[in-house]
Length: 203
Ligand code: IMP
Image (cartoon, rainbow, N blue to C red; front, side, top):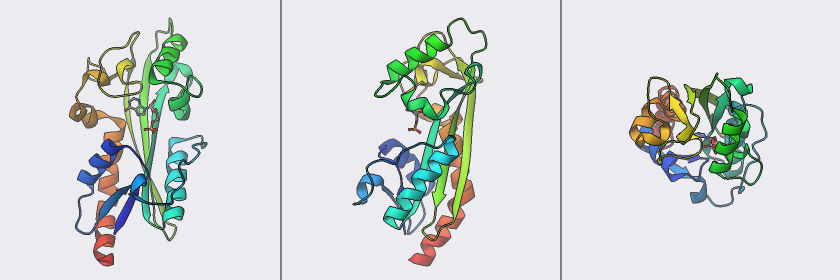
């Protein structure tokens, strides 16, 4: 059985392949399936809504079981911003550096620097059933960037219980506490058995 992963990010795909390693189940990236829409417009107002929208549209287009994720940063003093606008916080087009600079400007002088990363993962079956899981990682926004690893807001974010930013942690350490790591582990716990059984039935 084929499971389409609605991502072009090889790193996310590799992590999911390790979690969903069942006989007869092949995980495919979006660029391995011809005829899919280039982009799904992420215009829902929640991470769950965007993940479901992506999974649903690519499931319909491909006829395959499909998994999609959406994630971002919520800052408490900013009322949850940038939230679902995390990728384009500084406007479109913008770089990670532009987004980080805007975040620092918005938080200038703020004493409450609490934030959390959130990630939702959705799964859609071709006959219409849908599920979601979520993960989150609380932490703090620094006053200046630290570290070179990772991407996005990583150099500004220190996860709770750590004194290093996500950009100062290696991938395994980040994954053990990150919103995406938690959501992926929850997805494997909630859906692994069902997908393994489905793959056996289709074999
Ligand atoms: P996506 O859902 O992976 O496309 O992420 C949307 C945006 O949220 C990214 O462009 C980043 O700005 C931000 N983001 C999501 N996850 C992370 C993370 O683990 N570290 C840093 N930024 C992240």
